[in-house]
Image 1 (cartoon, one colour):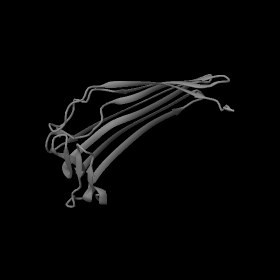
Image 2 (cartoon, helix red, strand yellow):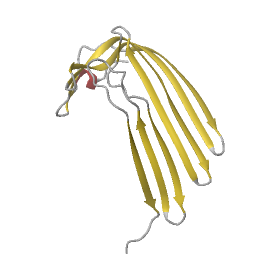
Image 3 (cartoon, one colour):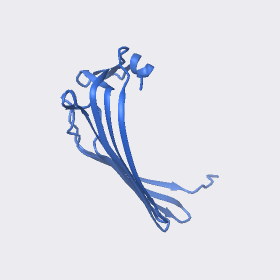
Length: 174
């Protein structure tokens, strides 16, 4: 893959962070494997994908100044591997769904993790229809600690966000 125009010439100023392009980027070369498993039944659906990628000259954001200035650069040799999974289970009109994803990315030549890789994360939701009124949904979004970071990034703690939604049926105000 040849680097895009944006990767070569970007200038993004986010106030406290600046992202710069690099016109001297080399094209990426990669080997990729992706394996998937899917199962669909009346009340259950399940999908699992696992992947592994090996790159030469991977284009990535390299920290020039920690937490404030990044510039696109080629990583000599890099590897990514991980998975994503999704499940839905319907019992009656109630829907339970969950998903999760994980990526590990490593600069093989420098023997350090690649920057800006999200930690293990997922979502769990429960949707319950309320007859004659609408739909009630509960959702939990989860992120694990991210401790596998290069020296130019800060480790981050895990967190969870919980949401409760109610969507009503159509009704007239007047």
